[in-house]
Image 1: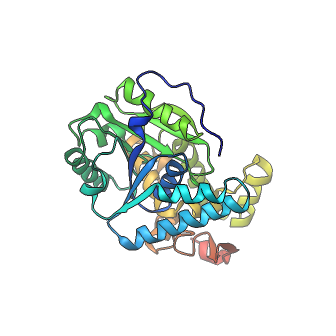
Image 2: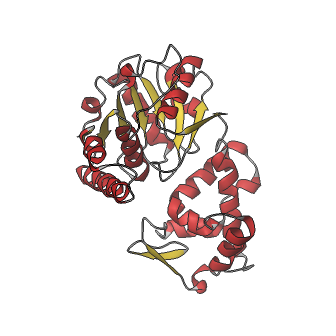
Image 3: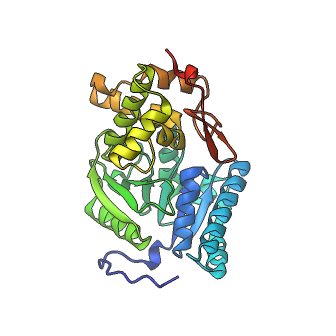
Length: 312
């Protein structure tokens, strides 16, 4: 891989930011680990589940193999990336000596607040604490710590190794220095960071999730079927993927959680999640992760589900 050539501000010390920790080995977590490790950072991957870590590392290895096959990286790059990753099942041990922690746990407010309370105790007071939350208030998360000026949102897009955007969300107290540092770290990963303010859903999901929800409402009201809705949006609006297929990829439980954050945070009925979305999540139909959502997913391929499943 070509060496990075960055014009970094004087306050940004690349060497001191070479060791980070990522909490969570799921889809977003392992993607974040993969990306940091590929660009030379020493990364501690932390998850309470050994099984989740094994699955996450298998995913990273498979994705690296894909990059090698496409000649995006060399075999040596792959091995170097894997050597940059150390795994932990104990959070306290995993965050020792790191300069940055990126939390990528489930999109659950109470879980994240508890994690940040622990991180505040386990890490050096100078350590920056970032969250990959896609909708939860950074200010609220920061309030669980004694260092709100060092808490920031670092919202990566899925799949992390490929997608260029990182939403950088400032909490009410996030300092300019921390914001600038995270912006430059994002650039060091060949990402495009965009600074946004701390409002429910930020920018990406405040616009995306109501569109997905409206597509589900359109399906629920019988205006058109799954394939028809997705085809209209792909061919008519130049979207690479229809909103219902995208919802399956994101996870319907995640979509519901974000819609609830928007509804509760903004207090507008237009953000109320569609009853069909609520029912599907309750029934465990979560999309790709469960094998069935608006489509049936088998071995990574999709099949249209009988339309009767979506009648009121």
